[in-house]
Image (cartoon, rainbow, N blue to C red; front, side):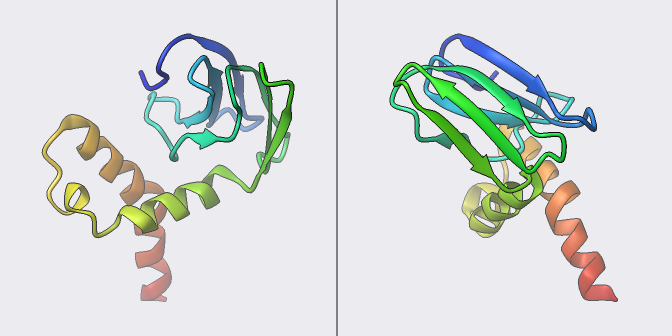
Length: 123
């Protein structure tokens, strides 16, 4: 769950760890294999996203839309996740998560971003 409407296209990264989807709501979304979102939706298309693909190195996503554009989204999903988690770190939802969605989002940030920062600061 995540897209608002139909999902038109999905792709899986070469390492098999990331799913990219494009849909009716005009967004491109990133997921892990458990179906949890990995970043905020990528917005830019003015209409449906009909096609998505991810490069072999996982650093570029390409999407094609109803608006007649092809868009490139550069940077690995971990970099996008880092930005999103950093922006939300001190948001009340993250400091005291109440819903299952908020708890799951916190766990994703802890697993992929915040735990890595703690390891770095401990070196």
